[in-house]
Image (tube, rainbow, N blue to C red; front, side):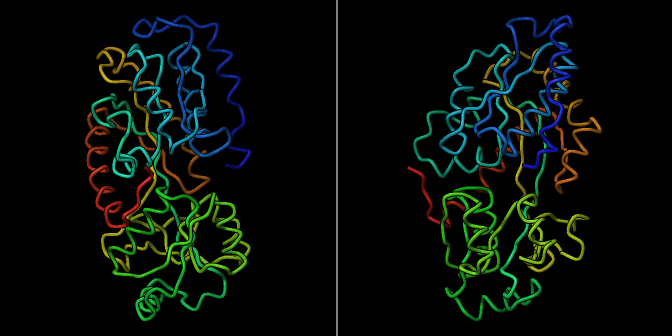
Length: 321
Protein backbone atom coordinates (compact mmCIF):
# COMPACT_ATOMS: atom_id res chain seq x y z
CA UNK A 1 0.00 0.00 0.00
CA UNK A 2 1.36 3.43 -0.91
CA UNK A 3 2.88 5.62 1.78
CA UNK A 4 0.25 8.31 1.50
CA UNK A 5 -2.33 5.86 2.85
CA UNK A 6 -0.40 5.42 6.10
CA UNK A 7 0.02 9.09 7.00
CA UNK A 8 -1.35 10.67 10.16
CA UNK A 9 -2.74 7.79 12.21
CA UNK A 10 -1.04 9.03 15.39
CA UNK A 11 -2.43 12.51 15.98
CA UNK A 12 -6.06 11.60 16.52
CA UNK A 13 -5.03 8.61 18.60
CA UNK A 14 -2.95 10.75 20.96
CA UNK A 15 -5.77 13.24 21.30
CA UNK A 16 -8.13 10.43 22.20
CA UNK A 17 -6.01 9.42 25.18
CA UNK A 18 -7.04 12.51 27.11
CA UNK A 19 -10.78 12.20 26.40
CA UNK A 20 -13.38 10.66 28.74
CA UNK A 21 -14.50 7.11 28.01
CA UNK A 22 -17.72 6.21 26.22
CA UNK A 23 -19.93 4.57 28.90
CA UNK A 24 -20.87 1.45 26.89
CA UNK A 25 -17.18 0.66 26.37
CA UNK A 26 -15.67 1.90 29.60
CA UNK A 27 -13.70 -1.24 30.51
CA UNK A 28 -10.05 -1.72 29.65
CA UNK A 29 -7.28 0.55 28.47
CA UNK A 30 -7.77 0.43 24.70
CA UNK A 31 -9.83 -1.17 21.98
CA UNK A 32 -7.68 -3.49 19.87
CA UNK A 33 -8.36 -4.03 16.19
CA UNK A 34 -6.70 -7.37 15.42
CA UNK A 35 -5.53 -7.77 11.82
CA UNK A 36 -4.57 -11.08 10.20
CA UNK A 37 -1.97 -9.46 7.95
CA UNK A 38 1.44 -7.84 8.47
CA UNK A 39 1.92 -4.07 8.78
CA UNK A 40 1.88 -2.09 5.55
CA UNK A 41 -0.65 -4.11 3.56
CA UNK A 42 -4.12 -3.08 2.49
CA UNK A 43 -5.91 -4.67 5.46
CA UNK A 44 -3.50 -3.07 7.91
CA UNK A 45 -3.90 0.34 6.30
CA UNK A 46 -7.70 0.13 6.32
CA UNK A 47 -7.61 -0.90 9.99
CA UNK A 48 -5.29 1.93 11.01
CA UNK A 49 -7.42 4.55 9.31
CA UNK A 50 -10.59 3.14 10.91
CA UNK A 51 -8.83 3.04 14.30
CA UNK A 52 -7.90 6.70 13.97
CA UNK A 53 -11.47 7.82 13.32
CA UNK A 54 -13.10 5.46 15.84
CA UNK A 55 -10.75 6.72 18.56
CA UNK A 56 -12.05 10.24 18.07
CA UNK A 57 -15.70 9.19 18.12
CA UNK A 58 -15.40 6.77 21.06
CA UNK A 59 -13.15 9.13 23.01
CA UNK A 60 -10.71 6.38 23.88
CA UNK A 61 -7.60 4.85 22.29
CA UNK A 62 -8.04 2.35 19.47
CA UNK A 63 -4.91 0.44 18.43
CA UNK A 64 -4.08 -2.07 15.70
CA UNK A 65 -2.52 -5.42 16.60
CA UNK A 66 -1.10 -7.50 13.75
CA UNK A 67 -1.38 -11.30 13.97
CA UNK A 68 -0.58 -12.51 10.43
CA UNK A 69 -0.60 -16.10 9.24
CA UNK A 70 -2.81 -18.92 7.93
CA UNK A 71 -4.76 -16.65 5.61
CA UNK A 72 -6.07 -14.55 8.50
CA UNK A 73 -7.12 -17.55 10.62
CA UNK A 74 -4.69 -16.86 13.47
CA UNK A 75 -6.18 -13.41 14.05
CA UNK A 76 -9.74 -14.66 13.63
CA UNK A 77 -9.22 -17.50 16.12
CA UNK A 78 -7.70 -15.08 18.63
CA UNK A 79 -10.72 -12.77 18.47
CA UNK A 80 -13.20 -15.66 18.48
CA UNK A 81 -11.75 -16.80 21.82
CA UNK A 82 -11.58 -13.29 23.32
CA UNK A 83 -13.82 -11.85 26.02
CA UNK A 84 -16.90 -10.27 24.33
CA UNK A 85 -16.45 -6.94 26.11
CA UNK A 86 -16.02 -4.85 22.96
CA UNK A 87 -12.31 -4.30 23.52
CA UNK A 88 -10.97 -6.96 21.10
CA UNK A 89 -12.24 -6.76 17.53
CA UNK A 90 -11.29 -8.25 14.17
CA UNK A 91 -10.67 -6.33 10.96
CA UNK A 92 -10.80 -9.04 8.32
CA UNK A 93 -11.13 -9.48 4.58
CA UNK A 94 -12.53 -11.76 1.88
CA UNK A 95 -10.46 -14.77 2.98
CA UNK A 96 -12.74 -14.94 6.03
CA UNK A 97 -15.46 -16.31 3.71
CA UNK A 98 -13.12 -18.33 1.48
CA UNK A 99 -11.44 -20.09 4.41
CA UNK A 100 -14.75 -21.52 5.60
CA UNK A 101 -14.46 -24.05 2.75
CA UNK A 102 -10.74 -23.90 1.92
CA UNK A 103 -9.81 -25.13 5.44
CA UNK A 104 -11.62 -28.30 6.48
CA UNK A 105 -10.57 -28.06 10.15
CA UNK A 106 -10.94 -24.43 11.20
CA UNK A 107 -10.63 -23.91 14.98
CA UNK A 108 -13.62 -21.55 14.87
CA UNK A 109 -16.98 -21.16 13.15
CA UNK A 110 -16.95 -18.03 10.94
CA UNK A 111 -20.66 -17.46 11.62
CA UNK A 112 -21.39 -18.77 15.12
CA UNK A 113 -18.20 -17.51 16.81
CA UNK A 114 -18.39 -13.85 15.73
CA UNK A 115 -20.63 -10.82 16.04
CA UNK A 116 -20.78 -8.85 12.75
CA UNK A 117 -20.36 -5.11 13.37
CA UNK A 118 -20.01 -3.28 10.04
CA UNK A 119 -18.69 -3.54 6.53
CA UNK A 120 -15.77 -1.16 5.92
CA UNK A 121 -14.67 -1.26 2.29
CA UNK A 122 -15.13 -2.88 -1.10
CA UNK A 123 -12.10 -3.31 -3.39
CA UNK A 124 -12.33 -4.40 -7.05
CA UNK A 125 -9.57 -6.15 -8.97
CA UNK A 126 -8.49 -5.99 -12.59
CA UNK A 127 -7.65 -8.68 -15.15
CA UNK A 128 -4.25 -7.77 -16.61
CA UNK A 129 -2.32 -9.47 -19.41
CA UNK A 130 1.24 -9.23 -20.67
CA UNK A 131 1.66 -6.31 -23.03
CA UNK A 132 2.04 -8.50 -26.15
CA UNK A 133 -0.93 -10.76 -25.37
CA UNK A 134 -2.90 -11.26 -28.63
CA UNK A 135 -6.36 -10.39 -27.27
CA UNK A 136 -7.06 -6.71 -26.69
CA UNK A 137 -10.66 -6.88 -25.47
CA UNK A 138 -12.64 -9.19 -23.19
CA UNK A 139 -14.64 -10.72 -26.08
CA UNK A 140 -11.37 -11.40 -27.95
CA UNK A 141 -9.90 -12.85 -24.74
CA UNK A 142 -12.77 -15.30 -24.22
CA UNK A 143 -12.68 -16.40 -27.87
CA UNK A 144 -8.89 -16.85 -27.85
CA UNK A 145 -8.81 -18.88 -24.63
CA UNK A 146 -11.73 -21.07 -25.67
CA UNK A 147 -9.98 -21.82 -28.97
CA UNK A 148 -6.84 -23.04 -27.14
CA UNK A 149 -7.91 -24.85 -23.94
CA UNK A 150 -5.12 -25.38 -21.42
CA UNK A 151 -2.62 -23.31 -23.41
CA UNK A 152 -2.74 -20.02 -21.49
CA UNK A 153 -1.41 -19.38 -17.99
CA UNK A 154 -2.68 -17.36 -15.03
CA UNK A 155 -0.35 -16.25 -12.22
CA UNK A 156 -1.63 -16.67 -8.65
CA UNK A 157 -0.07 -14.59 -5.91
CA UNK A 158 -1.61 -16.83 -3.23
CA UNK A 159 -3.70 -19.99 -3.32
CA UNK A 160 -7.14 -19.33 -1.86
CA UNK A 161 -6.93 -15.55 -2.05
CA UNK A 162 -9.76 -13.39 -3.36
CA UNK A 163 -7.71 -12.80 -6.53
CA UNK A 164 -7.30 -16.55 -7.04
CA UNK A 165 -11.05 -16.98 -6.59
CA UNK A 166 -11.76 -14.14 -9.05
CA UNK A 167 -9.86 -16.09 -11.69
CA UNK A 168 -11.65 -19.32 -10.84
CA UNK A 169 -15.02 -17.58 -10.92
CA UNK A 170 -14.22 -16.24 -14.39
CA UNK A 171 -13.16 -19.68 -15.63
CA UNK A 172 -16.21 -21.35 -14.13
CA UNK A 173 -18.72 -18.83 -15.50
CA UNK A 174 -17.19 -18.58 -18.99
CA UNK A 175 -16.14 -22.22 -19.39
CA UNK A 176 -12.45 -21.38 -19.77
CA UNK A 177 -9.53 -23.80 -19.39
CA UNK A 178 -6.55 -21.80 -18.09
CA UNK A 179 -3.49 -23.24 -16.33
CA UNK A 180 -2.81 -21.79 -12.85
CA UNK A 181 0.79 -20.92 -11.96
CA UNK A 182 1.13 -20.37 -8.17
CA UNK A 183 3.66 -17.93 -6.70
CA UNK A 184 4.74 -17.07 -3.18
CA UNK A 185 3.27 -13.60 -3.21
CA UNK A 186 1.93 -10.97 -5.57
CA UNK A 187 5.30 -9.34 -6.25
CA UNK A 188 6.96 -12.36 -7.93
CA UNK A 189 3.74 -13.08 -9.84
CA UNK A 190 3.68 -9.57 -11.29
CA UNK A 191 7.41 -9.77 -12.04
CA UNK A 192 6.92 -12.87 -14.19
CA UNK A 193 3.87 -11.34 -15.88
CA UNK A 194 5.93 -8.26 -16.72
CA UNK A 195 8.62 -10.55 -18.10
CA UNK A 196 6.16 -12.50 -20.23
CA UNK A 197 6.64 -15.82 -18.42
CA UNK A 198 2.87 -16.00 -17.77
CA UNK A 199 -0.07 -14.61 -19.71
CA UNK A 200 -2.40 -13.01 -17.18
CA UNK A 201 -3.45 -12.50 -13.59
CA UNK A 202 -6.06 -10.83 -11.45
CA UNK A 203 -4.39 -8.02 -9.51
CA UNK A 204 -5.55 -5.43 -7.02
CA UNK A 205 -6.07 -1.97 -8.44
CA UNK A 206 -3.19 -0.74 -6.30
CA UNK A 207 -0.70 -3.26 -7.72
CA UNK A 208 -1.93 -3.06 -11.30
CA UNK A 209 -2.37 0.67 -11.84
CA UNK A 210 1.31 1.75 -12.12
CA UNK A 211 2.07 -0.98 -14.68
CA UNK A 212 -1.04 -0.20 -16.71
CA UNK A 213 -0.18 3.50 -16.79
CA UNK A 214 3.37 2.72 -17.93
CA UNK A 215 2.14 0.39 -20.68
CA UNK A 216 4.01 -2.59 -19.21
CA UNK A 217 0.71 -4.45 -18.72
CA UNK A 218 -2.70 -4.16 -20.35
CA UNK A 219 -6.02 -4.22 -18.52
CA UNK A 220 -8.84 -6.14 -20.17
CA UNK A 221 -11.57 -5.78 -17.55
CA UNK A 222 -12.39 -4.81 -13.99
CA UNK A 223 -14.17 -7.10 -11.53
CA UNK A 224 -16.67 -4.47 -10.38
CA UNK A 225 -20.17 -4.27 -11.92
CA UNK A 226 -19.42 -0.79 -13.23
CA UNK A 227 -16.46 0.87 -14.95
CA UNK A 228 -13.96 2.66 -12.71
CA UNK A 229 -12.65 6.19 -13.33
CA UNK A 230 -9.14 5.05 -12.35
CA UNK A 231 -9.17 2.68 -15.37
CA UNK A 232 -10.53 4.75 -18.27
CA UNK A 233 -11.63 2.66 -21.22
CA UNK A 234 -11.53 -0.61 -19.25
CA UNK A 235 -14.99 -2.22 -19.12
CA UNK A 236 -16.45 -4.49 -16.44
CA UNK A 237 -15.73 -8.17 -17.09
CA UNK A 238 -19.44 -8.68 -16.50
CA UNK A 239 -20.20 -6.89 -19.77
CA UNK A 240 -18.79 -9.97 -21.54
CA UNK A 241 -19.26 -12.72 -18.93
CA UNK A 242 -22.77 -11.96 -17.75
CA UNK A 243 -23.21 -11.85 -13.99
CA UNK A 244 -19.48 -11.79 -13.21
CA UNK A 245 -18.49 -9.74 -10.18
CA UNK A 246 -15.69 -10.47 -7.74
CA UNK A 247 -14.68 -7.74 -5.33
CA UNK A 248 -12.65 -8.04 -2.16
CA UNK A 249 -14.12 -6.64 1.04
CA UNK A 250 -13.03 -5.56 4.51
CA UNK A 251 -15.24 -5.69 7.60
CA UNK A 252 -15.27 -5.36 11.39
CA UNK A 253 -16.30 -8.22 13.71
CA UNK A 254 -16.33 -8.89 17.43
CA UNK A 255 -16.49 -12.17 19.35
CA UNK A 256 -19.82 -13.95 19.64
CA UNK A 257 -22.25 -12.76 22.34
CA UNK A 258 -21.14 -9.13 22.15
CA UNK A 259 -23.69 -7.26 24.31
CA UNK A 260 -26.28 -5.25 22.39
CA UNK A 261 -25.26 -1.88 23.88
CA UNK A 262 -21.61 -2.40 22.96
CA UNK A 263 -22.55 -3.61 19.48
CA UNK A 264 -24.68 -0.51 18.90
CA UNK A 265 -21.86 1.78 20.07
CA UNK A 266 -19.24 0.07 17.91
CA UNK A 267 -21.47 -0.05 14.83
CA UNK A 268 -22.21 3.67 15.13
CA UNK A 269 -18.51 4.49 15.54
CA UNK A 270 -17.48 2.28 12.61
CA UNK A 271 -20.12 3.78 10.32
CA UNK A 272 -19.05 7.30 11.25
CA UNK A 273 -15.43 6.35 10.51
CA UNK A 274 -16.35 4.89 7.12
CA UNK A 275 -18.36 8.00 6.25
CA UNK A 276 -15.54 10.46 6.97
CA UNK A 277 -14.27 12.28 3.87
CA UNK A 278 -10.70 11.32 4.77
CA UNK A 279 -11.44 7.57 4.76
CA UNK A 280 -13.49 7.77 1.57
CA UNK A 281 -10.78 9.74 -0.23
CA UNK A 282 -8.14 7.31 1.03
CA UNK A 283 -9.94 4.43 -0.69
CA UNK A 284 -11.14 6.25 -3.80
CA UNK A 285 -7.56 7.12 -4.74
CA UNK A 286 -6.97 3.38 -5.07
CA UNK A 287 -10.23 2.56 -6.93
CA UNK A 288 -11.83 1.22 -3.74
CA UNK A 289 -15.11 2.20 -2.07
CA UNK A 290 -15.91 2.94 1.56
CA UNK A 291 -18.98 0.88 2.49
CA UNK A 292 -20.66 0.64 5.90
CA UNK A 293 -23.53 -1.59 7.00
CA UNK A 294 -25.73 -2.63 9.88
CA UNK A 295 -24.74 -5.77 11.82
CA UNK A 296 -27.70 -7.58 10.26
CA UNK A 297 -26.65 -6.61 6.73
CA UNK A 298 -23.09 -7.81 7.32
CA UNK A 299 -24.33 -11.07 8.83
CA UNK A 300 -26.50 -11.78 5.77
CA UNK A 301 -23.68 -10.81 3.41
CA UNK A 302 -21.12 -13.11 5.05
CA UNK A 303 -23.49 -16.08 5.06
CA UNK A 304 -24.15 -15.58 1.33
CA UNK A 305 -20.45 -14.97 0.63
CA UNK A 306 -19.46 -18.23 2.32
CA UNK A 307 -21.94 -20.12 0.14
CA UNK A 308 -20.77 -18.35 -3.01
CA UNK A 309 -17.10 -19.09 -2.38
CA UNK A 310 -17.86 -22.67 -1.34
CA UNK A 311 -19.06 -23.31 -4.89
CA UNK A 312 -15.87 -21.86 -6.37
CA UNK A 313 -13.49 -23.60 -3.94
CA UNK A 314 -15.18 -26.94 -4.64
CA UNK A 315 -14.93 -26.23 -8.38
CA UNK A 316 -11.16 -25.74 -8.06
CA UNK A 317 -10.61 -28.65 -5.68
CA UNK A 318 -8.31 -26.39 -3.65
CA UNK A 319 -7.62 -27.11 0.02
CA UNK A 320 -5.28 -25.58 2.58
CA UNK A 321 -5.23 -28.55 5.00
